Length: 115
Length: 111
Image (cartoon, rainbow over all chains, first blue to last red; front, side, top):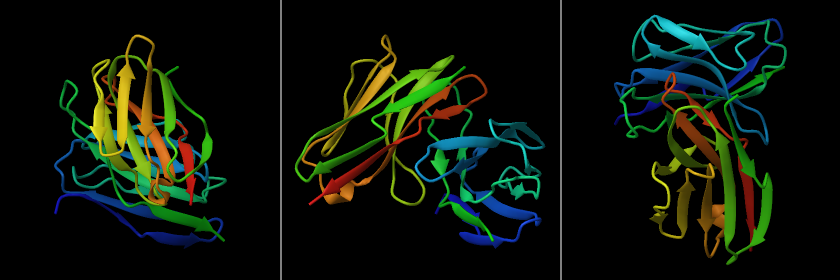
């Protein structure tokens, strides 16, 4: 079945460690996104990519890094520079077709807790 | 600055009540407005609206867009406890294929 797979679903990190969240999609979408959601809040954009080997910072990119070496994959690294990383992370994808025809699809999310 | 504002932030109602959730936006190069339902996991798609005045309906849920006044509403009639969730509004922009999300409305339906 087509979809977006995120892993791991739950992750605990010690302070000072980098962690990488995986995101893979088989929807043949060009655009991929990473959002962060804190309790009681909406989605905030961390990074997005519209094409392989290219990505742009979102509103809260500090302390995060991404890569887009393959169309299907858009991993997110939460670095030790991110001061408050405990949150729910959502990966998403969409087509780049023009007009009004596309929506954004989400993975199941990854819960990151710093201990 | 592009932004999407939802109101109210939270709402508690009794089963059977009707609720209206609001979403206003200021987004450059508007393409569409999307509603999602989120229940402790990934948001699930409800509606996509592109034209003013045309109601989209799915069961007890309906939504409409006003592109002149830059807002949308999501109505839920005869609410059930299973409607308890966060409802997210997003606006898609043709600029950079961006999606702008509101903070969501947290709906709690009590028996």
